[in-house]
Image 1 (cartoon, helix red, strand yellow):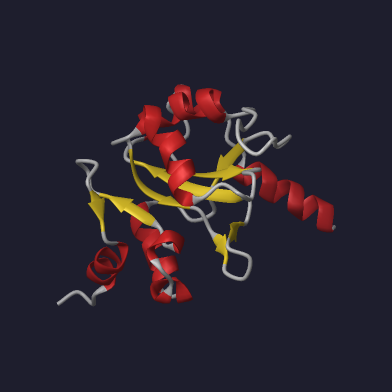
Image 2: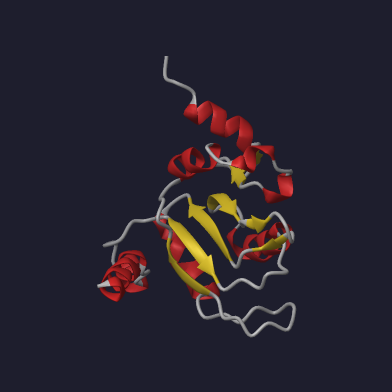
Length: 160
């Protein structure tokens, strides 16, 4: 029973790039997996922004607070599904070039989709009290960096 449930779940989050290219899947939030633990947020953002700056509005590399290393996966939300294929083509099955790692990058869809939903999820966590290097990185539609705490409060403020 358990393996049936997990394979169904895996199918639900599987990124089929041909469906994306055909316009059949419009999800924009990806989970990047198998990231070497020594990559910092700044290093990984640098690699991604090389070709994809201005195309995403949220990036988050969760950090293990005790050992200060990343936990092996990250989330990125693209401004539009049209930016997903180029990112996929560059990173899917890529070997990481730092830290002598044998890890191979894999991508799937994130369970929580979209900047606002992700902000809602993060705002209820202890992240708000951590230093900036451990917090999600947000960008506005012009690619300018935003303070996530400020955006989260604005997004989640009760509508008057």
